[in-house]
Image (tube, rainbow, N blue to C red; front, side, top):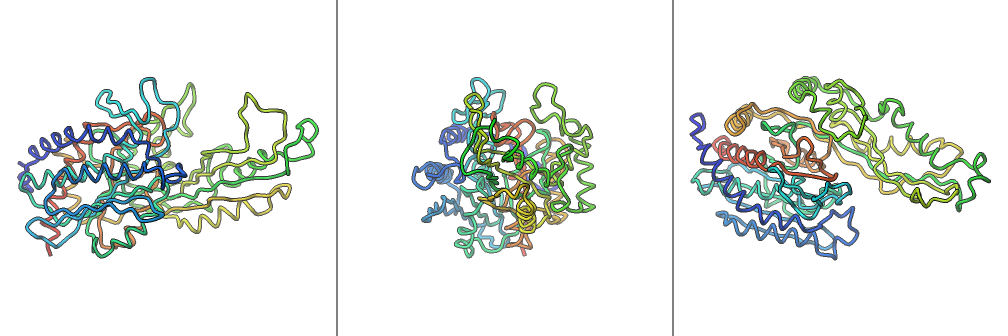
Length: 478
């Protein structure tokens, strides 16, 4: 028994472990469904894959027999499916609402999975569940449900709960605004947001994400000819569309250092700078070694702190796709008419995405070399997230939970990725506190091959959330 809060931590952990083990076969079956997000599956509205995933999760939630729960699967025309769960507070408590968030869509499978592993054939190896979407972030449905089920079965108390599980997060969460507006009255005011779609710095303690980067993305095409021509005849006269792309890329980041121009940077708040120093100290060399460098490849810096700041507070550019390039082994000696690159520009957490979007377009379309044609398609942006400060009681619960279930202090973390919804919720619910956390830790490789969920860490994380939510209900009573 945790004497400070009067919460039976050992019983929580035992019951969470049992419910997770019981639910694992169901999760494995759901992970076999190739339910890619809208951006990667043009037939997402008709092939039924996202819908089947949502239906399977709905059936799991219904099977958990949560008390006083209403479960809705919304499938509005032209939108991806959305799961909404509303659970009355214990003993009819109406003061305070906790909103859980997760998502049911996936990134594409990608190539490079290790022998014996694949995106849609889940396999457990050394307490890690390998599959696309397990850690990012199908486990979140189980986590939210198991937390509340454990509280109820142990006779503990919880505030009013709403759970929101979308199926469009990997495509920028464009559909969730529709559903949140539709459900506005049912959701009501929110006191705490629990987002389970983030990461962790290691598998040894509870990590709370305080910042997420925003982004600007687009497909940028440079066109120089109406059709391809003989490279021996045209080179030296016709400028290469690929070389023009290189010149445009250099306008955004330095080709030697990768440093992005000031148009996309911000000043780092003092509190976040100090938190980053502490996190980098805890993470140490794992800041660099968490990535699968090939051969003798070196990181951009050997300074742990600088590397950490680079990935959480600095704008960074990646080219994540290309078109107009034939396969190398079959390419002829042709000067190609055009080259398309997909730019992914990560933004600092506090950078205005629309301002960055305008700068992006201006930089790439002004005074184009050789007056070539530049077309920008699929331009989009998303806000970063800078978490509001928590009340002392919530920070105390977070620290107690980490000590009880991990035997270490909780730690704050900045993440380089994006969860577009977090800033939306921050604006819609200005009084809400946030717990943004997740299971994407070292080498878990979300979006790439060999994605895995660390099972023991995940169980302890769910135990932490259970502990915090039941401890929270006392403080939310008005």
